[in-house]
Length: 197
Image (cartoon, rainbow, N blue to C red; front, top):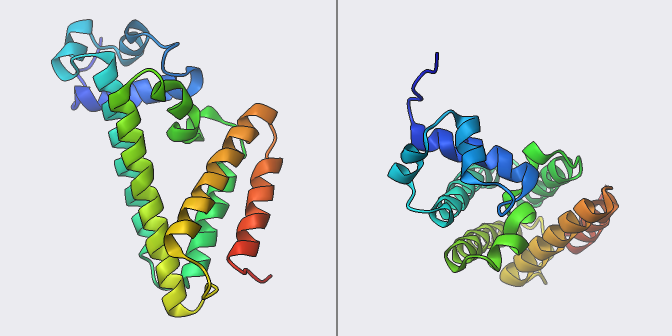
């Protein structure tokens, strides 16, 4: 006997995300998502007018959750800004380096694929990654203020450079199926941020 989910829309999003992280956006049909969720097709169209809208909302949810996690880490001023930045990159290394789909970054997994398929989804990804970089830039500013980061760093440039470095390293990790690119990114990050052992 099937039990009604308390939040069917959320259940569809969560089920879809898990499947899409494993297979990609285009390769997964609505029937697969709805069957796995135990939800009739009509319910999907009650919440989403199309698969494209579903994808847009999937990324909106992803970035909302991701930014909440970033804020918890970045706003904890019990450690220096440099230590908080390095905790972020260390966390990235541990989740992206293990190549397990359920822990992968949705941006790394899908951005190249869906950016060519849907302008609304591309805009959502662009906006979300922009907010991540803005949070990183604010933390670099905090590091300049607390003296934990080199004074010569430009916050916006540093944040954008590091984020691009780690996204690229994550893609190479998927291609190579090893985490050597992430370790290279970590070394470059430690040098840029003047991290001493």
